[in-house]
Image (cartoon, rainbow, N blue to C red; front, side):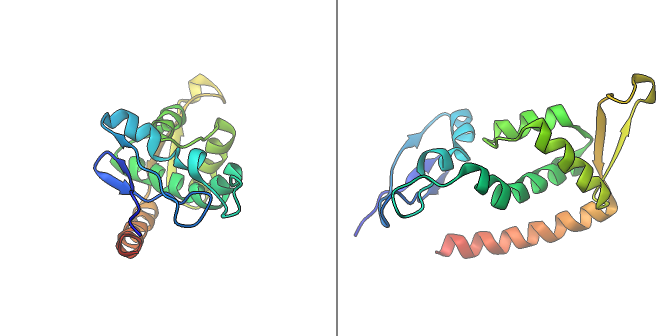
Length: 158
């Protein structure tokens, strides 16, 4: 049986529908639309096999939270990042992250030794914090990148 695939930017994503084997096709030519759409696939097509949509919060908590951490480590390795910028960056890629989720996540990553932050004490306790990756965070990012490469090959092969 020949199933069309969802075409996004230069990537092809098979999207499982309400019945096994039901796939959808849509070509997006504008890269910015493709980027916003990339992670919103779950909004449209995350089916549990019984015809009902999966719980997006559950998917965020159990799966995408790790993607957010990888994304944060990646950008912190490139240079300092601040929370507001990171919220916008994650939203740009279609992640639905609230400040109430991001800031505790950044604090946990700092407590784990993966990030280090600094803030201007003259600006008070609510001053923006700039985060950068630590040596330990670089080690974690290196491990994660290797695992992603391996996973990507395995998933791409089906």
